[in-house]
Length: 296
Image 1 (cartoon, rainbow, N blue to C red):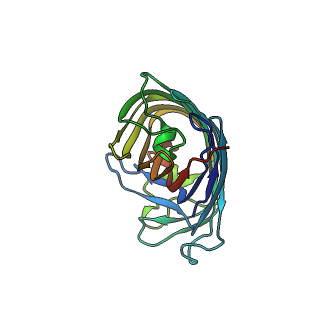
Image 2 (image 1 turned 135 degrees about the vertical axis):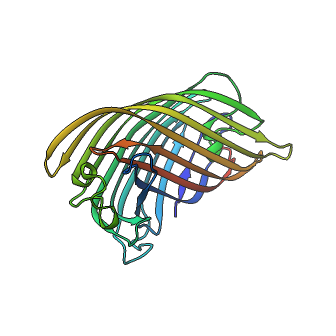
């Protein structure tokens, strides 16, 4: 469960927000066999997430952590997590920083569930965007109406960013039916990557006369990374390119006094490994929110 409180100043004086939702960071392991998408996922075991934050004058800060000590399934590895978000978003440009750390995963898509209580993954960096055209579409408006949603509009962006990913495990990521299919991936115990991203994005929203709206945003980015691996046989390095993707959806009601809605977002980065495989962190968020305009 996510609880979010903020104050935003733009064309209107004050707009507090309260929201409920869920967020997590999962890892997909794939591409072990050439010309095949065969793979499985590492999922966190979290029953609820608590999120607190504040925003004003375009600046925002948020902190997310476990809101409950309960697991989705007590038989699966317990997950400890922390997420920090910092950002600034104006009408035509913005920058968002993030720090995510998760420890404790279980597998999904394997013949039997495998627990990885000591598997740790850290994902941090920033992404920024600059609009090619001037319109009433904004990312903040799409996700939580922190910017006014007033009319149907489309906007195109130049998108770029930097991030670092760190993975640590005390045992092989490939076990049971996956053992032996990719020795480089199987022997890996640590991965560290520094990634530069550059690409384009497009966002659009449709607003009805009754002020209901629906919209979406999609980014595609080329990523160039420097990797350092630690395996049971020693250390190695690699420089290579992959693709990254961001997708955000939102819908709701943008009344003059009261605003409400729901937003979904997914950010996917593809990481190379010492073998043929890919390890792809996917950051996901769902938020149901309510805003109201309150004069100072």
